[in-house]
Length: 218
Ligand code: FES
Image (cartoon, rainbow, N blue to C red; front, side, top):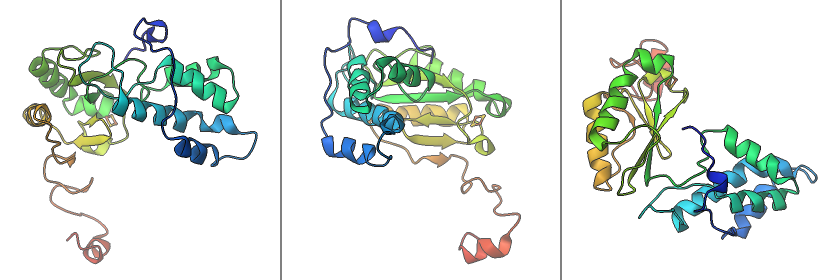
């Protein structure tokens, strides 16, 4: 998703506090003293997950996680760095949402391997079925569509990420089934959608068969 200028938007709340100071302490404690800035990324993730639970979501009735400017400023204070350092990290990575997103954030991979395996069908299924474009959120606050670069599951292309879950080996029809299920707040089983196991061939393992037998997958 194109990073917007949401950092200065009117819907930004004035303040932010972490509701789980223990979690903050645990994250800071992972790094040597004087290296608190190493905690920037996990703290951004913590803030995003907290806001997913507690709001606010701007105009949306329900919503997923995003990181407010106040949260970024709080992280700068905790890590003892300039605010701009936090803004730089948060605006660089697509996994940090800088404005409210829907309850179900659909990240569509359109990089070459997914594109070659008909990622365009998946994009079309989502945009047609939800009636929104990439970068938009449905009026009910349920879905946001976002285009992303390779999510590292190319073997099982085409694929999407829905919140924290991967859905792989997709077709347009399967994508619509997933959206329909989410509309009812039923999370469909994630992973490959064509019956294969992990990223092995659909007919089963073709190499390392002895090991596969030992692992009980043959
Ligand atoms: S190109 Fe889509 S997961 Fe790698």
